[in-house]
Image 1 (tube, rainbow, N blue to C red):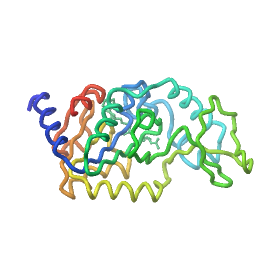
Image 2 (image 1 turned 180 degrees about the vertical axis):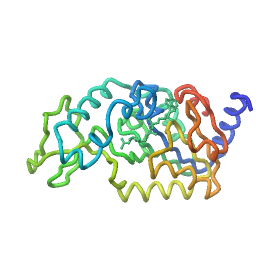
Image 3 (image 1 turned 90 degrees about the vertical axis):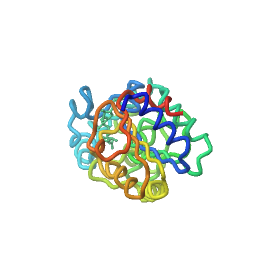
Image 4 (image 1 turned 120 degrees about the vertical axis):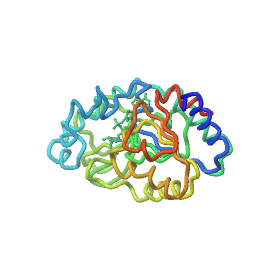
Length: 242
Ligand code: OAD
């Protein structure tokens, strides 16, 4: 089917869907200039996740981990939501019975754009969690001290990120499950579909009978499973679905 026909079909399905759930990944923020993880210039092509994004790495060398997150905070601070983020805010505003946006992105751009019914399942780079008292706070300081500490108990702060080897928060898992079980349309945007549990969400949505649409620059492990696969940039395609 020609791309225009696919877009038209996707728009028609979205307009009639009552319960819409969306999953986004790094590809939606790539159009804002935030690096992805596994693309040609992806972060995991140049850095080792096991040195920077695991609890063991933080225990071994918190300074190195904070240096990396500080660098990413500086970079992300210069970026703005793009037309794809903004189109999802508009989609949320339209009268669906239920709407839920699940993002794996930690850059906070969905919230900056105005999305509210949102789970940031991998955390948020603008929040920190105390390794001592556990308190979570928003923190937009740039740069942070080399080893930032908690104002309340002086223990070391860590990025509020779900690292490899860690589980998603119970509340997020519950939310996602609810949003997936109840959806009749599931839209997946800009994720390579290799990191679980998010990588399994399209198949859960299929099992409950939802129509699944994917938007990505290229095909993914989920492309064979989805009902409609639209190839192109998120910033160009997502606004066309409204
Ligand atoms: P990846 O970097 O693995 O995948 C990005 C996807 O976006 C790829 O499939 C690209 O083809 C696609 N893409 C790139 N540019 C695009 C564009 N302009 N429009 C549409 N699609 C585009 O990122 P994620 O799938 O999000 O975890 O990675 C999942 C998790 O792995 C991340 O949340 C991160 C990482 O380790 C944490 O930070 C905890």
